[in-house]
Length: 178
Image: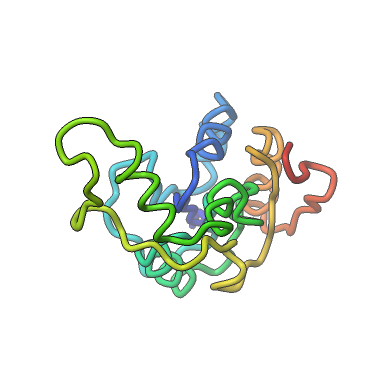
């Protein structure tokens, strides 16, 4: 039976998923040896009850993110923080200097043009947490692969080693900001 693999996108730019796609034809080999059971790259709506490896991109910035990562952690054997936003909160964490009210005021009341200008929406947008936090501050993380985004070769090595049942040494593969 093949190991199962999932990817999750929290508050981030999707650059880590783009880097994952940059593995190009190596994705075919990975998917021949592991089943992709959940990801924003496929049309699966429900996170499975059990997943062997989940790669998490992005910081935990909203109530929705917090609920999602707790749900994912409960159902994942090995959780990987993928990229600088998941590892440090990076760009999403820049809002921590100003507070939620100031960020919402700037985003909706001060800068949005057109109908509704000056009105913060009360629906659709998720409730923000007081601060944007790295994944390991809210759930246990088993491995960290920093980078903004991590290079495709580093992601390939990570997945390849995990699929083979080995714990990769990620120290030489990527670093914060690269």
